[in-house]
Length: 394
Image 1 (cartoon, rainbow, N blue to C red):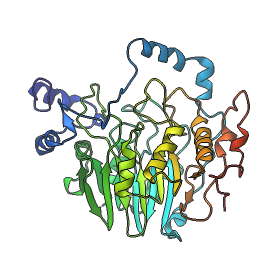
Image 2: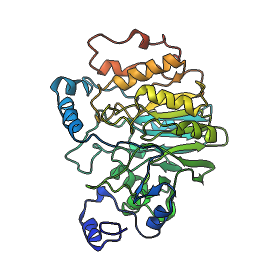
Image 3: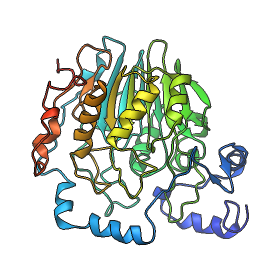
Image 4: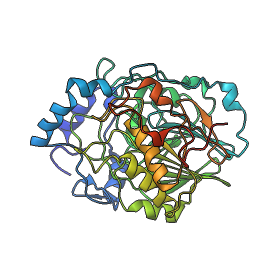
């Protein structure tokens, strides 16, 4: 690399001046490893299939008009308090009867308890997903559980380095523990700048695995992009994750557009007892990098070998306003997609622990109490208990 590459002297001086939240560029052996990656070519990481990462030209102007339209803006946020589950340390201290328990903390943050071990996916406890404390998307509900009350975590898993998945305050808090961090290739540079020792990093390319506390964690492909600074150099990888314990397997999608690779991931690492699938922040202006609820359900089925097995937990919605769709639309769309496929979907409130393999999983359409109802009213097919995919709550 030349010019503005990682080893350019001017770039080095400029990096020293940028905010800590921007993280750090890969360098040294990390940069050499990136250049050797089969997923890195023409100076950037590549998607498994082509992807447009943002609106451009005339579509950007059109998007801005829609995004800032007053009546549409009102529906992108809850109108009432988002109902949370008052999880306590005592709740989480009791082992799950089945050996597998998930607690969705909002957006893409999930505490997964797998065969006696604890995995924390994409922890974002900060108030804004932004490099600045005074600007950027702000939380639409409080965190349901203080980070300090989660108890010990064996491994923290990061899907990619966007602000709504890699949160500086959360990482700094977790750096003071003895947890291991499993991250995609290149992302370790950020964590090292924020105080995570190199010997607690497990930095993986796609299809590489690591063993942590008896769990096998594999970075699997995703269709997305990366970047935290002013310029997006595509020098850090994005990933989904498959985690296997002695008895249970789970999958976390991170951020991704739909692509045929879900079938390969399922064939290699599934079937899964539970999938955590991104179903929010989608738009026709970036159709290749985020999935709609229908696409998320399609991905879930692909991961399960085409069968509606296991439980799907919808993630990446409800906590931040990141797209032009109404706030409640991802939840409603997921329920409809699951009903159409006869699939099982879990609908926990933020902070509500549940066991995906139990007879019953959370089913209440809790978001309706805090959302503006559509002009035509709520869909009858989403009524509690009327859809085959939604098992009644215990």
